[in-house]
Amino acid sequence: MVDEIQKRILEEVADLHETPIGAYNIRANSELAGRNTTANIDIISKEDGSGIDIKIKPDTKNESVHIPVVLSRAGIKEVVYNDFYIGENADVVIVAGCGIHNCGTQDSEHDGIHRFYVGKNAKVKYVEKHYGEGNGTGKRILNPGTEVYMEEGSSMEMEMVQIKGVDSTVRDTKAVLKAGAALVVRERLMTHGDQTAISIYNVDLDGEGSSADIVSRSVARDDSYQKFDAKINGNAACSGHSECDAIIMDNAKILAVPQLEANNIDAALIHEAAIGKIAGEQLIKLMTLGLTEAEAEEQIINGFLK
Image (cartoon, rainbow, N blue to C red; front, top):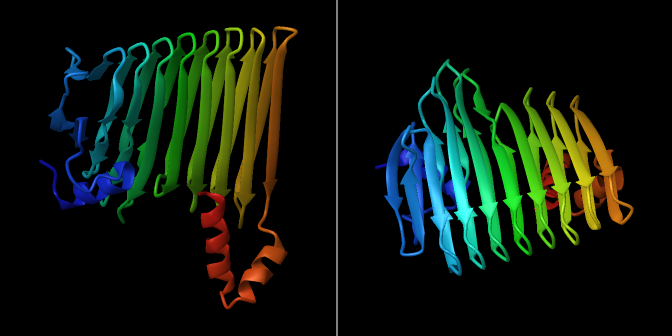
């Protein structure tokens, strides 16, 4: 069972207002708080207790898996390994995410390592949201590691969101794509205070016709720091695109590190990066409609991060 604080956090990270339909595994303060399996989706605890295996049968369609994590006590530090085995021709949605409520003096940290084995012609949408709250001095730390192994003709769309309250995060994502596989990543990120956020992507396009499209939109406020480090390795006749589009405010710092490595004459790789402040004319236009400068900034930021 989850308490009221944990329920609110689940709404933030997984849009759960009630028990989800379909397969789910809810983890609260390092313990299992609820689990359900279906005829096509099985969830099995690892024997050493370090995480779960999620097995999705071939040809599974229109089903979802929710695996949110909630920490509502200070001083918890955990590393969890979750492995997803998605069968051929499956078409599923996987919703992860972690929320930390920390009102204490000790740091709370969740490091989730997710490995995806995507079968031939399978289609996966993966949503991962991170959120932090609480007025304690202890930090809220999230370090997600993601590994994606995609078979021929498979596709995966990843939505990575972190908008509020996480003091420190290192997001490390690696992917290996075979022929015809397609990976799409959409990252949305905001930091404030003295928070730090580092996003690392390393994608190997090994198969003919494989493709990757990685786009990050971020806002850095106050004294926060962000780093976007994306490397695409074109090892076959493939197409790759990465993009960092960031708004910088106050005394924040942003570093964008584009890396493209073409190891095949038919590898077509592109990187784009833009970092800048909110344009003055945008603020003036909204302020003429009756908004204060602060309200105008928030309106622009909200639209940018949608």
